[in-house]
Length: 369
Ligand SMILES: Cc1ncc(COP(=O)(O)O)c(C=O)c1O
Image (cartoon, rainbow, N blue to C red; front, side, top):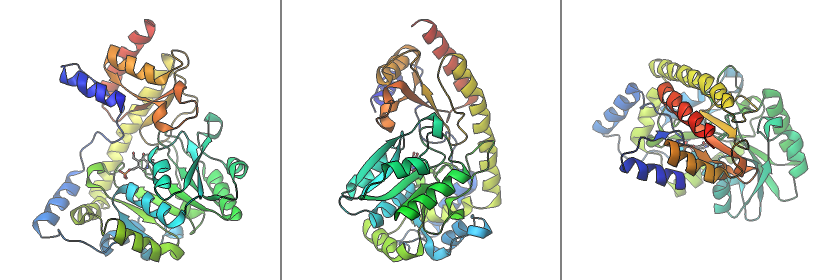
């Protein structure tokens, strides 16, 4: 937040800031989505909907999954972003004192969602040796009698790394054997490069799957996502949704139906290739100037980079880089406690040209420290 506030101050003073701290795509929502949203508004689709969402969208979401693991429509809940889905999943799973295992570094809001229900986030340090992901072995070693659930995010924010299909199977089986439940955040599915990614529904029907229209479909501001729950939790999910937010925005739901059609999917694929081109440029360019990136990120639009060559304090480093070069990056502290002083996150939700300018500014900065 400090970096962001400073970046805005500098821009207000007329400085050119290159935003590589952002957590959302730089593309607009696809035109078909915008048109469907406008049509929904002008045709009176402005009322509450059922708490779990309109049938056409729930069906369209269920149909995005491969035949072999397609969930029944009843298990699909439309939610206000994947944030809403995470709140529902933790809400139905967590009682006061329950522990949830999470990878550190990871998406910071999860810990707060867990605390909201009186639970305790247990951050498990992860590093390049496991692709910055939890493993079955780490889960076993950190499991206690209070552990209720495990959260996996693949691709991960902030590392962009992926859990392999075989490790995901091992994780799901281990958690089931230990008597807990897996919540799998698949929000960056779709945004993967050089690798096939598999939904955890392949491994079990007893997992909670989190997903969203925010990232792949470029719809962050519409606030729409989804949750697939095990069938034993569907009634409780429904009650939580009714009480927490009544329903997801109706126009956003109609817009989201159009997001799952061919022209929009083709546009999203075109954008994915642009993200890949940016990643293919940025990772080697940052490595060349001394950032430590031990694992090539295979998804999302983030690069988690070690800065030990230049600094032992990522917060100071990010603020100084911003001040000296106008490049805004996120210090590791935003993502956890483990070696956060030694890492920063770059987001490549910016054009290739701006990324190139950012790297050349960083290169001059590094030469002079
Ligand atoms: C891993 C992860 N999960 C969930 C979210 C929440 O996204 P939304 O509520 O927009 O779907 C984010 C946002 O950055 C994220 O990075």
